[in-house]
Length: 426
Image (cartoon, rainbow, N blue to C red; front, top):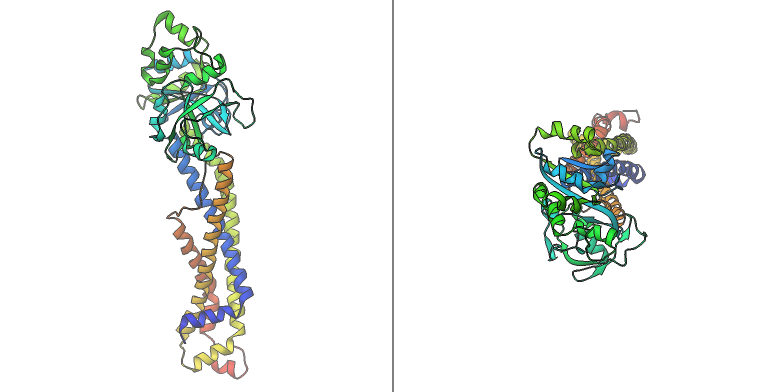
């Protein structure tokens, strides 16, 4: 008889024990799959969003909060900082580039961010429709924003005060959509971007044309041009340009590696600002996530250990019920090696079924979780993605099956046919 047919017949003879072993193994593999997909995509997304940003400067407060609000746009800012302080940062020799961002409003739960053109270029963003903003009160939508809101170039919308849905609206100062960004897998996908001047107009001029107290073209150019911004208006005109102006955070790039040693300390000790390192704070955040990950790893380990025990018990139980079948097989010429192989194949089939079911469950759970995160405008994850590390989960399942089958296979192979058929115990 074919070994595979014989093995599947033996499995059908013990459906309850086999099913329990498969279920426990599937739950363990599913937990490991969720961890692998979720943490892997989260770390990858954090790395892409923070790449090329050496330091984030904001109002005094929690460095973690500054990073979460300034880079990942997942928290509320610690406050605003004067534009005059931004000018001073731009003029420092340690600073290669400074990108100021102005936050505070939202639309449909998506954040409206006043940003210079360099911000889009930093993430290699490009329009899939329309163009980038070129004047105040123009806006470009991230790919996810456009997909969720249905807006397109030519539409208009009014922002709401605050970063959560339901805030009071700025109906007197509508934005004009001039473009939609192509999906890039970065934080741009879930942002609405507009020039910094737009944010100032909405909160100071209520949509009116700029006056002497609001920024003109010179002020916008000074903010927009990053490190070269300090070459803008000088003297009294420069003071007038920045008087009363504020931004929320500034994203900095170091001019040299030595700046990493001196600049954060200088900002934190000699100014009213707070400097936060994305590399340090993101690593701290992932360590906090890692605590929960370790707990889930331990839980998955317990499930896998239980699956191994259940698989061993199921195989031993099945073996006891078919001792006479084994004896007949031996009399018909089956070798000990064949009996041993049949039992191992049985365990490997159960392990494979558990692994495949677990992978399917894990991907399904991550896809559901990703849909929920997308509805909450959080960094999305997807279960429709295969990672190279998932192959090791299948190898792990096979290893568990072989270990669990060791004792039953050895016991089946050493069955004494003469003793068994004479009514004794093997």
